[in-house]
Image (cartoon, rainbow, N blue to C red; front, side, top):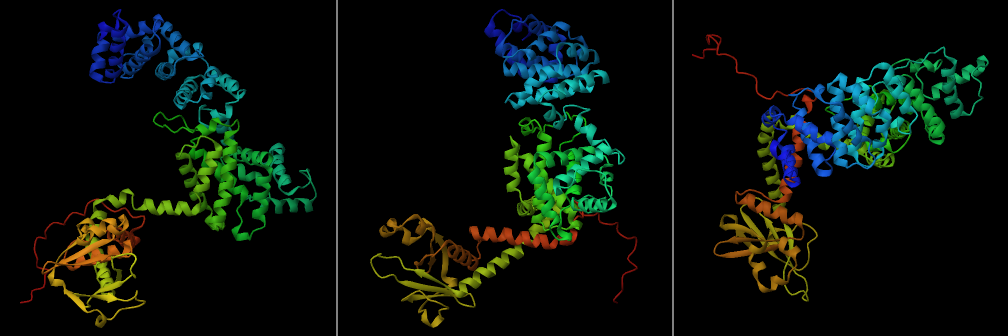
Length: 605
């Protein structure tokens, strides 16, 4: 391969590079290839600038795979190689595959070598990478974010501040903050900033929230009477501290970030803000949703969900493209979620004591919606609209039985022990229904008057009684009206569908598919048959199951499977009710050692 890569034939070189890109992931192959100076060969091919398109893409792929094994130090990379790779990133119309690999190589350089960071930082800036975040290709966006992360992680403090200032003057600043592109970013700074209760400017923001909600006078100072009125308003706004709401923002996180979100909602979505506040202030005291407390806790929750303020995680692939669709995406996201919280509070008919329960449901609603990867905030709203409280309850119930606990050996063993009891219960229900009997329609010429016949099982389960009827019965048909009978001991088998004798006749060929699916026959001695066409699928399942149970055979209808799953699920939940939140061991406890003597046993002799 090394020889073919350096050959003059373009086709042979392309095939060799393609094979090399595939094999480079193997550690043994990589070691041998590197020992043959293969890394230097690839670096020279890139530095030459003569490769383009597919050939260059395979070259970069092989180079990155080989370097990722950690056999060769990144410090050996030449400046000309870095310039060439940075050139691909800065080119306006570079091929997507080449751009993606170039971004990945630069990221690895920055993360693995302090000296290479300075070289890369001279060739490419964070501001130049912003353009790659505005493309529609999510893979390119992700790799660009990863490189920005790396540049900020390795940057000294003074250089990091300069880069932050560059970013804050771009349209993409807020989206970058939400996605934790910056290690020390505006969201983290505001989240970890406590409010100073003595700072008049900060207190004016809270007063502005009160003024917008209740249309009061824009005067933060006043008489004792006015202060008492403000205290009442702050209580209606849902602050925990009614006298001095600034104290609610002294905990970090979320710190001042929560106040920023509330002010954005009040100014940009004023109608929504006023509706939420006034709607809750007019409810009963026990059912009002405290807006201030909810906004603070919601901000804390959103920071945890989006990992705001945490270092970038190399193993995390969470990517939310909707944060690139609005220049104030974080604030808009908060506004969507605070409306969701208010809606969920009403659906749960919650009180102040249910605050934590509501927040748990809202967290689940948000995380489930984000997992669907909505591409815009409007799509997020639609996803959340479908995840109301009743839907969350349904999802929780359906997922409870699929949890790992229900696949553990003790639970499986319990299920196996319960199943025979449930099957016997289903069997008895089927036989009881046969004892009640059913009315069947006779097959024949459609122009003739429709005729019926009735069949039921004797109470001792030994005889099938049947006979003709002039019309469909309204109640129970006594045995005296059923002139014919078949001993159960004479029944040889039960057949269904096309195997039934009355479905093989010429006249039956004209019957539609529905009749074929409802047909069954009882074969009994001496070579006689009793033919049925059930009025519906339910009766078909009841009778075929009941007849199979009489003959000691397995009940295999869809209804039996459905009933079995339902009843076992209910029985399992009842049996495990007392074990909720208790870890069930995978294996039974060990049998204790045999006692040294059995003198403690009672001697009956």
